[in-house]
Image (cartoon, one colour):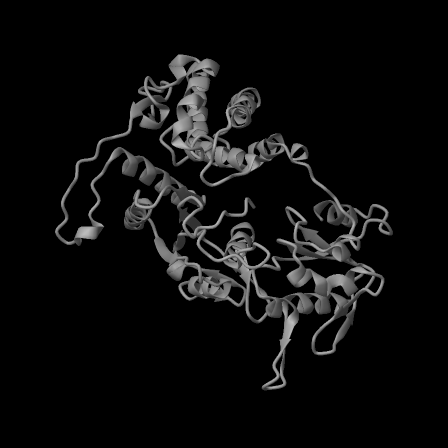
Length: 460
């Protein structure tokens, strides 16, 4: 998309490289009637659908640009069968009200999904296939983009970038290979590239201008020690935080063979955090602080939290993620205190920053439309296609039991698909069929591992 528009703007063989207009939607984040349209037998009225409206707008467009309609979501027979006449030589969308929309030659349909288990042979035979193997999308590409985009500020000198790049290239693959070598189990399965992105975000947090570490005024030796310890800490609390706790000692044992022992804490890395050194010295590991319990008579019994090592360290991560607008996923068995830790940390952030929170609790009967309505009703409309927090505040969207919604007959969870679209594109489609951007939000999800009515989450 970007390459074609760039070549078109440079007038490189315009007959070959034309500009591209695109529309992206998740077909499983809405019902099939909302996707294609619905005819009411009571009122004899036709309500247009999102896909049919987008296709009609592209057909009516007078530009000669290519037009891509990207369906980014699971493919199943429930909605894709209506596309059969679009994908074959007819190139016509047939709606239930009798309307037939003839597509133009420059219009193309693109389906982005992780598998074709629920697609029919009729659909598969009408589409060209591109399989992107995991080996083709290595984390190295993500790292290069991260260095050029997130480490572009002046505080990140060439020396800082070189040290971090060297650490990632020389140390990370060995850690990732441990997952396969030792069979590390994850309560909530993840994707390798996303683990690396999470680690990069944590490194960005610890090296940002708002952090306690001054990486701009250190000699080379202390700078290397500081960045190595930041790398180790971020690795343990991103890649190492997703595995079951019984596998974490194996990870720590491996790190002790790969890094200088002076760059590791004396005990478990999960019992220590990083603090700045004195007089421009390197950062050092210290035990998580012990915070005394202070009784507050204005709070009821269920709002009182006795600080422990777990509440202190998990609250710290919640506050850092909210400050830097990084989304977070909490998992753990029922009753370990996920919700109370999140809510306590949010209240502390609200007392220091301009933040509001939207709390949702999913159940097996939660619908995608309900989720969208509950989020939108607590936001403020800036323009027709822009929403944000009330009074310009940032908003933390807290979703408890995120893996509870019931799956449909094809295994999809519509509320989860809506959240994925919102998380990736930072917006939703209005009921009036136009895109609304939502800015200034950070999503925090909590869920127990699958079982007892909880469903496995799609890795996407």
